[in-house]
Amino acid sequence: MTSSQQRASSPLPDAQQLKARVDLATFAGQFTRLRRAGRQFLGLCPLHEERHPSFYVHPNKNVFYCFGCRTGGDLFDFVMHAHACDFRHALKIVEEFAAGVARASEPRSGSRFGVSEGAKPLSPPKAGACHSQSSQDLRARILTVLVATNRRLCAIAATNRDASAALATACEPDRSLYLLEETK
Image 1: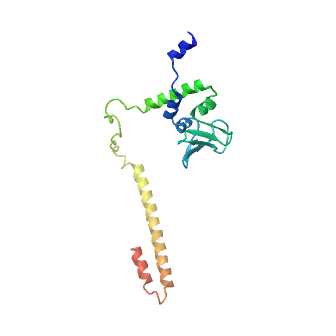
Image 2 (image 1 turned 90 degrees about the horizontal axis):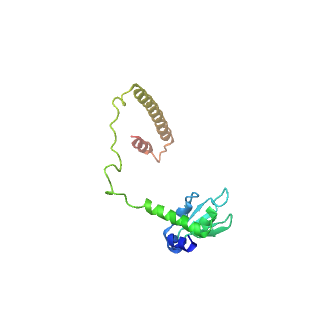
Image 3 (image 1 turned 30 degrees about the vertical axis):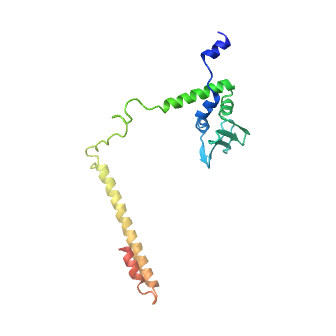
């Protein structure tokens, strides 16, 4: 088979159309975790080792730049650097990625929401689970702590009321009444 026959059997896709279909941030997200930083994405550079993020992806322009290794470019430049390959191989990698994304986003067969999809109904509680000895013990300990906390809060409120009444002046005779109304 000659090289011209090989090209005819597996034609290369149009690079511009392919670049327009694939989002660089999504593709680069396979190699590093990206987070939104304003209008762009930021992450650790997958092309070299670093401790602080210096890898930026601009989704509007579909370009990247790393301030650490001073590497930048478009989608194909990123693929060529990440996979250490030539342009033809990068084109095939991006085409496979685009086909995988297209397959993943196709609608499922059948209706949109089938019977087996979605949330399952809750199973009824096990018989006796709420009335077991361990749950009753736990409930009793929780109630004991709540009663003790309530007693402490009532003591604090009484102390605050007494202190507030002691601080009341002749100009503010009704101040203790406001505090009593708040605690009720």
